[in-house]
Image (cartoon, rainbow, N blue to C red):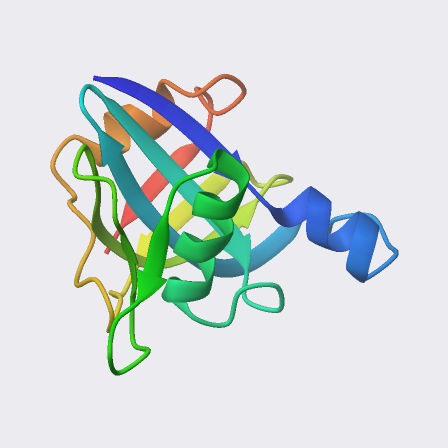
Length: 134
């Protein structure tokens, strides 16, 4: 499976916070799948306080149709080839070279941890990180 890493941290810190992204950051993440591709999408909690916000942002950037469910708890991708596998929270420390994945999403459930460590390590620039999955 092809893995694509998307991190909205730089975008948030440059455009909204008007500062450089900190070396240690926290936020939410979701796993979004399309056929043989998995997107690991990360975002600071200040930019996307809810996992649904993160999925909505991803869809808007990819031109995917979607809508909030009747209780506005999740953003549903309307295109059948796409789906959210789950989500959680993250902590990344670029100085210490570690990434911590933990918790779950109230909207989408817990992330799929099977092979997640290997997927993260396969991402360019992250092969020397320590990956902690709780």
